[in-house]
Amino acid sequence: MLRKAVLVLIAVGALTLVLLPSCAQKKDDVVARVGDKEITLGDFNIAHKAITVFNRPPLVTVDDCEAFLKTLINKELLVGEALARGLDKNEKLLMESERWKMEMVIGALYKEVSESNVEVTVEELQDYYRLSRTTVNARHIQTETVEKAEEIARKIAAGEDFAKLAAEHSLDTRTAFAGGNLGTLRPGQVDPLIERVLFSLSPGGVSEPVKSMQGYHVLQVLDRTEPDMADFENQKAVCATELRSRKRSEAWNNYLLNVRESLGLEFNEENVLWLDGLLPERGSTDASWAEAITEEDRARPLAKSSEESWTVGDFVDYVRAVAGGPQPFHSENGSLIRSVAEASFVNKKNLAEGTKRGLEKSDSVVRGIQRKMEERLIDLVYAELTRDAVVPEETLREEYENQKDKLVMPTRVKLQIINLKDEETAKEVRRRVSAGESFDDLARQYNRGRMKEKAGVTELMTKESIPGELQRYAFEVLKIGEIAPVVRAPLSGAYFVAKLLERNPEHPMMFEEAKEGITPPLLQIEKDKMLGEWLEKRAEERGVTIDREKLNLLLEVGDAEAGIPGAGQEG
Image 1 (cartoon, rainbow, N blue to C red):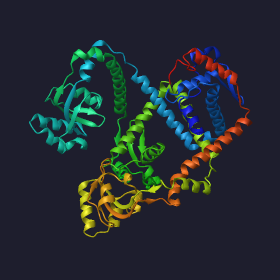
Image 2: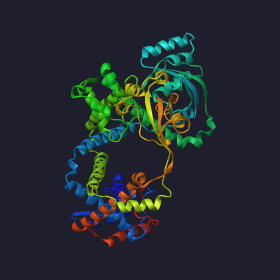
Image 3: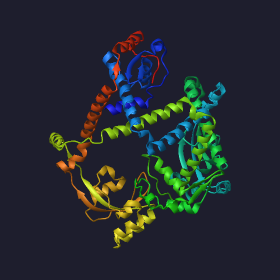
Image 4: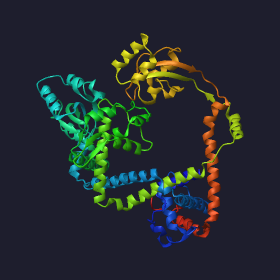
């Protein structure tokens, strides 16, 4: 597709000005003009080599070179049109550009901080090999405060059972039920702050409280296995790569820990829990929670640092700014809100530090923002240019007739669901509906957002869209009107009470049922056709010219270097 080809080109940084040594003497030769814009051999080469080798189009003939050159030309035409229409002033785009700037400045800061000390010695490599190939079988108890962790450590020292204490007190719900058991671990599988202590313990050893980004931990190693040093030389090069990567991560994690500590964050727990109660359940895409927040609510404070405060309105704006990201979910103690608030404070601090170091003016950041801007401008102008594209009814019917023997509507069901956070509450609600209480009333009481408004009634759903054991009940066990036993969603951990309202069996699709599926690819063809016609017309208006003789120089360079145009730099 034309648009896709242009976006791939932009995504890899098409027009950077780094030139290949093999083309240095011809780098300024102009191969195309788009109005007063010149595209040189250097531009062409670097655009082609920036594409990863697996996606890079081969340049065997002059026609191949011209086809690729036209992607550069199309990019110039589309970006120019977007600018002419003022799409670079789009409010949402300007907000996105601020986010890109923050992400890229922080990325540059990460590189600067993490690359500060990556040299390794032979002694370090030997120690790393011994440690990295060591495995431990371990368990832990996670707490919110150091005082609680110290209390638990004293009880263990006094002889109380570690597994029992983990089941009673650990905040890590994934391991608490198994006595805190983490299984067999290798370095790199746990938080570096925990790992440093964990792999220093002997079998049976119990640590003092260890602080991590998740809280405080009491650790115990049950068993330990160390590697044979005779194989060190064979692993030396691999270890060097791994150790440098580890040093980068440790440098950045230590930097972030210092940033977090410097913030001195304090939370308004009352407002955190109030907001948490508005959020949808885990896994929900329902964003209607934000509509219930008034202007007065937006001013409610959630957190403050040593320098500034953060409100409910800041939380809403932060979540909305993450375009296409997951919706927030209700969490028992507001942990999501705290982590989002902390991330906002940390990002601002890192942006300020990166700006102080001048990283926002670095070539990588400037070029990165430009690439993102061009990509979004092409998205916006593409939408405008193809807005009126439609698929004629006769085309849809013709496609339906061609495919109808293969078009089958799978069995679908409609359910009424009550989404609950814990098994005990779910069983109690299940008992109440079985005793005759209104399913509608209970669904409105316990659900949130649109599922609350709809009394838990879903649309017709296929088997793949229903989680876990509920799938079996909905499609194989229940009769219409029956209520399933309490079931747990495997990924979200939520519990469901569900009633089967409707089951539509598999059947050949009628035209109206098939339209939704067959329209998008046909509409895409119409849009690409419209775009192609527009590009052809605009190229003529802008006086686009291509110098095919100069393109031959690319092939000559390729012949000199194993038949690969612009060889010498992998994407």
